[in-house]
Image (tube, rainbow, N blue to C red; front, side):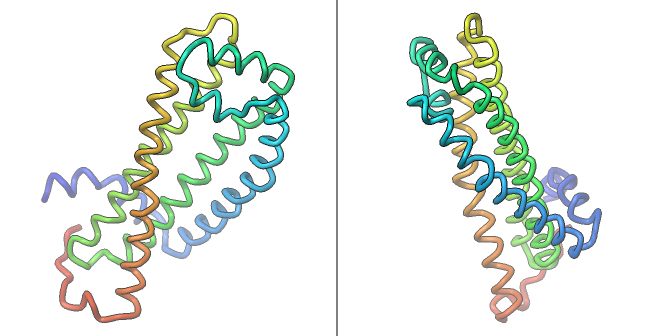
Length: 202
């Protein structure tokens, strides 16, 4: 258990760095940014890109150089929008990171004295780190491809596909983990279900 505690020490330090109220403010700002990027950025920019007949998702899902080259040629007239979408994607990634980390920090403080339940937000924070890392890498490989359409390394396609696969695998666990953590907090706050189970692990 000591090794496990040492592994999660960095996320504990983040959770303890500021008060739950400050984490709440960061979460609200991050959520507004998160939603704003989607509604005001992704939606209109993606519509412009899709006028080419393809989307950046099609590019990310392409598995051969022939497919990628065909998509890049079609995206040529809307490449400015593709570049803008990449910038928005990094803002989205950053906002999502702080949103999830702040929510998990609040949850971590609530579950602090509740047995092994405290591991759930810690694992959630670790998943957030890696899901955002692979999302960033996926975006990087896409940028390296479309900024050098005539002479990009073919290996970038494999790296792009692998990063996308790992990202979505992590996200499929990350979101339910946050949901579970929120449910546990509500149960602890409003029921006596976990009373008497408070072995301190930190």
